[in-house]
Image 1 (spheres, one colour):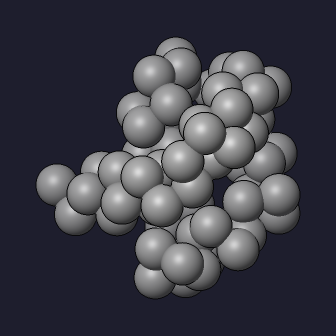
Image 2 (tube, rainbow, N blue to C red; image 1 turned 135 degrees about the vertical axis):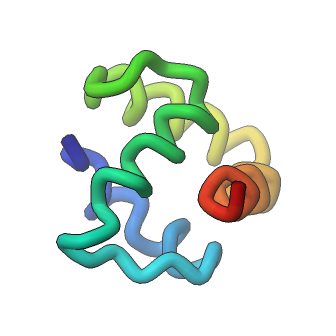
Length: 70
């Protein structure tokens, strides 16, 4: 879990997400949901996340915010 959190740190901050021990799993699941990758497939999330961010970072951030507020 969360092997990509450091790489996405600035994106999480843009979404107003403060990663803490207590909410890491919830954030991890939200990122998996946004990327469409099965839970606990860390390397696939990183790959897909990079693609999505390169394509449209703002859209990725908005989707992440929505996923965490559902």
